[in-house]
Amino acid sequence: MPCEAWKAKLDTYLDGELPSEEMRALGSHVQSCPACAADALVRVQLKRSIQAAGKRFAPTPDFRRRLQASMATKPRRSFRLTWALAAALSVVVVAGLLSTYVGVQRSRREQAYSEVADLHVAALASPSRVDVLSTDRHTVKPWFQGKIPFSFDLPEVQNTEFSLLGGRMTYLGQTPGAHLIYTVRKHEISVFVFQEEAMRGKWGDNSGVKKELSFNLATWSQGGLRYFVIGDAGAADINSLTKLFKATSS
Image (cartoon, rainbow, N blue to C red; front, side, top):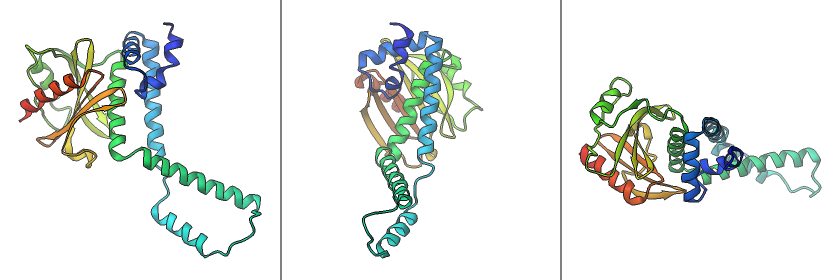
């Protein structure tokens, strides 16, 4: 399929709304095509900027109360409003609707999931997915020392279906963390590790594997750290890798 046909589907791919087969096909294409990979990274950054801007200018509860009180105390007038008043009311209504939409559509947990999914997709679209390339956990783990403000353990995956590809530093908002990539039967799974206190209660203590759009996601808190396991692999694979990490970190 020509690149132009793929690029027409990039936004839907980044939102995780393509069918599973198309998600895998486009993911493979992005990994092998520098032009489409660069386009995907630009769109991920734009998406995150728009999400941040949408939360920046939400009306405060006090502003809403004062506006409602002001409207309640004024006597009813003729239904023939002036153009200036109609325009002002339109701005208030639109601002209120946008604020309500953002608030309903993006809870703190949904926002956190979206950011984790963006990190996963951006890494797969990058020509250099890892900064330390090694299948040896004893090589990958020491690489993070001094780069992130915590330490963590990696499971032994020999004699399992999983293979460690390597790792890289990452950031969730302003929070530094570790990003590990594992492979299983042509699927790539991201494992993110952050300090729990930096998550500000966005997640419960433990969560089972959940289907979020086209990705399966598992997250849990253990030893003061917050773990995320995400990928388009089956729920059973996500759960198996999750158990390996939990057993190693216990």
